[in-house]
Length: 270
Image (cartoon, rainbow, N blue to C red):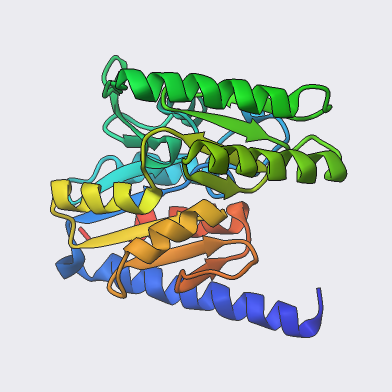
């Protein structure tokens, strides 16, 4: 890393530290919704999604935040709600938003409490065609595989060679276009859903339901930009890692962010 890059990274860390300190002190900005992406934010990105684990500082921070009456905690992920619940092991009371806003749930006393998804017959048929089409795209390509969700199918290319990943991604996007549905193109994934949902729409719904004065949202992927776009200047938006972003603040990587999050959770005023 060059001297200029090191200086910019330190400045971003300092700006985030100041913003979090201000938020910790200011009790007029509550009730507060703390909504966080999982992969690439609370957990490092790994080739095998089943091996993803929340970093220790994040686990400590979420446990602390879950005890407060003036803070609501939510995880907002591209994973299915069931998968998010299993991998994150979030504390009781945590709201879970999966499939980029297409699924909702909650961590209850006895496990996952999931809100059911009901598809119309036409939507169910479309989902079948999407799954079949993406399976055809993945066939014969090492490291390309398809994940099936209750209202979407996802093409994963993280473990594929660059040429295979690029071609599979282009074909998946073309498939979505031919079927007349939107596709979410994130880091090494293309998700094609039959229900219109984004992380931004999910956050707006949560804010209204909970009456949150301020939303703190952190994420690392292109799909998180829709969440940043849906929030206001009064909210705290944090981009994890490099790249252009609509977020006002930035943290270098999941480890740095989770350490800052843990310090902030401990510093929240009574």
